[in-house]
Image 1 (tube, rainbow, N blue to C red):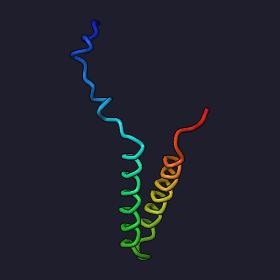
Image 2 (cartoon, rainbow, N blue to C red):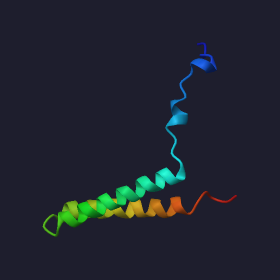
Image 3 (tube, rainbow, N blue to C red):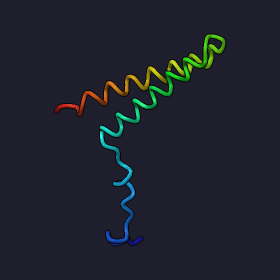
Image 4 (tube, rainbow, N blue to C red):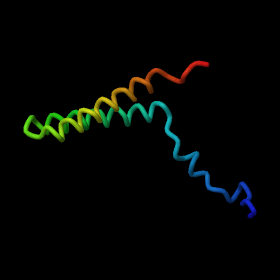
Length: 73
């Protein structure tokens, strides 16, 4: 199987990368959206609330890891 020359290869993977700032912005937006959904769910829908609370906890944990910067060697 022959490999395509570099000039014909897709660079989509390079274009699909997020900067830490972009990733942080998306996480903060997802947190705000999830908080709004959680508030709208109200106490009458405990299953939905539990799922949203798990999602919110995961998003917040990821946001704190992302804002901490890259791991040090």
